[in-house]
Image (cartoon, rainbow, N blue to C red; front, side, top):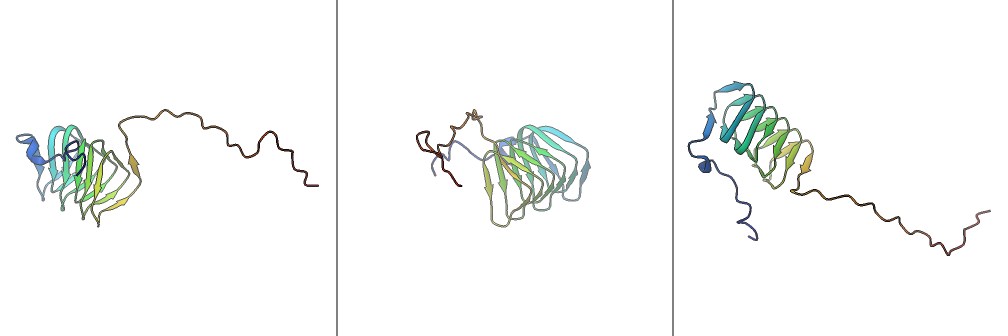
Length: 146
């Protein structure tokens, strides 16, 4: 499609040797900070922060906390806000209870977000005052309602 090369999706294979997997029966309590990729098949109770990389919440994954990562792929459950300034993908079994901040987003039929969607552009538009509407011209006579 048009511009498809500009915005390639991040994939776990891009982070060979820098991928952390939290197994389905594992539970982590506490905040995680990393560079690379994180796949959550189990439970994370805490915030997840990646300066660079990808966070993937699989179908069985559960995160209770805020996620900050350039690329986020959700097919499990997140209770907390999701910040994905590059790319966010919500698959059919995604369940998010929190606000979502994104630049590019893909949402498959069946995904659910209970919160607000906030588009984050890569530039800030300067706000200029709008001109006053011209409802009546200065030449018209005032209306006497008496």
